[in-house]
Length: 252
Ligand code: PEP
Image (cartoon, rainbow, N blue to C red; front, side, top):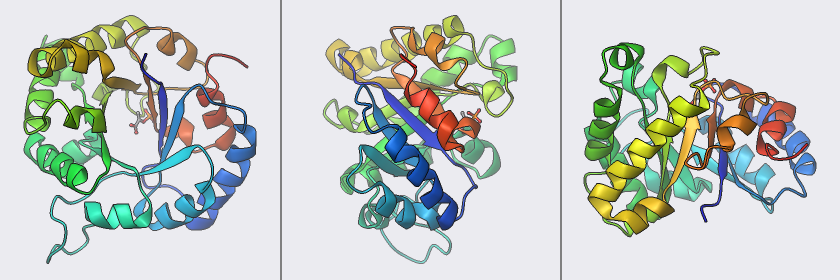
């Protein structure tokens, strides 16, 4: 049985004070919730405030990105050991905004995953096709290629430190959510690709999140799909009440 994970990606939003306010509102509201893991990914500058605010709660803190080297002359970059030191348990890698705007490739995703493993952290590895790729029938090949490249160095035991997030680029920040059927079909493709590479037991244990305009109003139907193990939530994770509703997807 895979434990669901609801993850919030704040992108480039929230100061330290705003992060504290968010946790002050969220933590009492989810005090009794124990049906899923909860992860929040603030910007680097608010990691410390978020880790402090979330201490003792069931919310884990993630970074949104990292550099693959552990230290060096890489101005502006942050390494996996630094994220571990800051109290992070995860980092997102391969987000489509990093791929489209900042030159992230499957090769850099591979290196970043390795750096996270070496530092004892887990990766939330994003894959997903663009609208053009979907419309030209390339969606499955794109996602299979991203998985093959990004997970190239992993062994079966390393897979337990990976969560895959399927985020169709055309659904991110657009208000256009993949239908549960479309999302579930690609989750099946991802599980099949992982089974082919690592074995079916490993694929069955892998948690695969859906991301792309997830809101309180659509989380329940997405989570009703057996292959969808959680969500990576952007815009709707910025407001504590909205994120709480998403975390509470099975019951009011
Ligand atoms: C994301 O940032 O990963 C995301 C899915 O954003 P949104 O929920 O706003 O579409």
